Length: 278
Ligand SMILES: Nc1ncnc2c1ncn2[C@@H]1O[C@H](COP(=O)(O)OP(=O)(O)O)[C@@H](O)[C@H]1O
Ligand SMILES: [Mg+2]
Image (cartoon, rainbow, N blue to C red; front, side):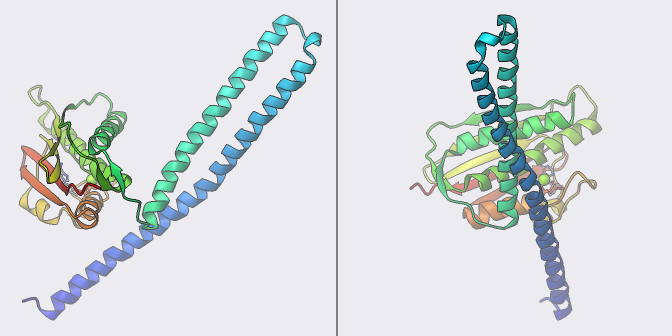
């Protein structure tokens, strides 16, 4: 039995964690909001400039007999480049807006929409994304990724942005772990490897991500789902990844997460999601 004092201590800890989370949410919502406004300006002014280019072109058409052929060609080229630039500005700003809206959605804690989704497609995409993010950060570091997707997997009802976040969190941890191990081992005989598989057994969909990195101690396994629990140096980890992943898979999708790991050898995370087909 816990003594009242211990319970109070646990409660206090919990409160502190929730306060931290709430302020983190507020902060990111604030920043996202501040960036969204100027980005909207960028998009609107680019679209306006695009229209102005069209007007300019009409003036040109009206005066085409006054301009020499060589000049006209040059103007055409410039206008066409300007159009392309304008499109690029709009395209990339809109991408940034989407990212920001994603942040706003999460930090407001708004629930996303459940839609029929193809797990294979999401896993593939986010494995690739994590891999490229890792490659961008740690040049000259490579991982051998093996993927195995069963092909008769039914679509299931999930919130795609939640599920993809879970995959990204696990993949990022796996990439980090094999990277750290490669820095310690420093041997040709170590090949950083991540195995990804998606399987289906008529009841559940199982997504397994296994890395041959550092593995985990019993202590780490015990605390892994706690908010802000991290063994990484400052700047490398927030300790929120697995807490969020647990919330998504267990609380929202009513699934399970299995952890299998031997310290120094490997870590394998298996997401088991009931395939409620709609
Ligand atoms: N694939 C893995 N291999 C080894 N340790 C892991 C792995 N995934 C998670 N961990 C451990 O769990 C801790 C918590 O993970 P997470 O919640 O994602 O936070 P963070 O990555 O920010 O530290 C990590 O700091 C690490 O100690
Ligand atoms: Mg993490």
